[in-house]
Image (cartoon, rainbow, N blue to C red; front, side, top):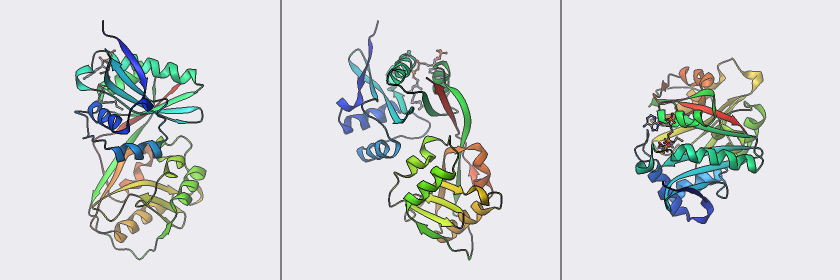
Length: 275
Ligand SMILES: CC(C)(COP(=O)(O)OP(=O)(O)OC[C@H]1O[C@@H](n2cnc3c(N)ncnc32)[C@H](O)[C@@H]1OP(=O)(O)O)[C@@H](O)C(=O)NCCC(=O)NCCS
């Protein structure tokens, strides 16, 4: 019988945790390389609490990691991975039961996560741990769009965008799209506004640019304003590869399809579990 236990993540150094996370996501659907800077950015943006996050131990050796982000009564499993040699032997199932019990213990009422739909082991693990699918999350890509437009967009403080998303956005947006997360974004990311349409993009000085937020105020929806904003953005920063990661609710996908973006093959499930 092997013995399983959990240790608080804050007892380990940043470099140790970054390395363990990289090893826990070996042979994943997308290549994962967590450097110290990537990890520190995740902690700050996503509100990961290292005192609630856990290193998974098997026979005294670290074999995995569970990162827990927290806001009010809600927590999010921000990352969960087991090193290759320890997978498929029940460690994940055991760890999820502990994490749910610990969340209840500290008074949380809901636990959230996102999992790649094509990740059979992950989806199975979370469903057997009591998580229910909320909705599908989709991503898009577009290579070097050719657009000409005379529209002008105004650059705004990311904080103004974050306040607008908090006030006008869907209340159950995935964690990474919520106003609270957007509020933690900083330069070189940039926010823009065109009338009642808003967006946030990653550094547009490099080749690959991510669209990290798109919002149209309720009173102006249905008039194609998001398309005008995105096309203006494509014209302002020509020659880029535009990315939308698979964290957008499927019902928002039309925004990206209207400007000719192609759907990515990987999608995610946004899942939730009452505690
Ligand atoms: C997903 C992951 C955390 C599961 O942990 P684990 O310790 O391997 O899970 P368990 O052994 O407890 O198995 C959980 C369920 O998945 C099933 N499963 C495990 N590996 C599987 C595989 N390769 N294919 C299909 N099902 C699989 C198990 O049979 C079990 O279901 P069952 O109880 O109905 O038999 C682990 O595989 C992993 O770290 N993968 C890489 C990172 C990742 O995908 N993280 C999750 C996304 S955030």
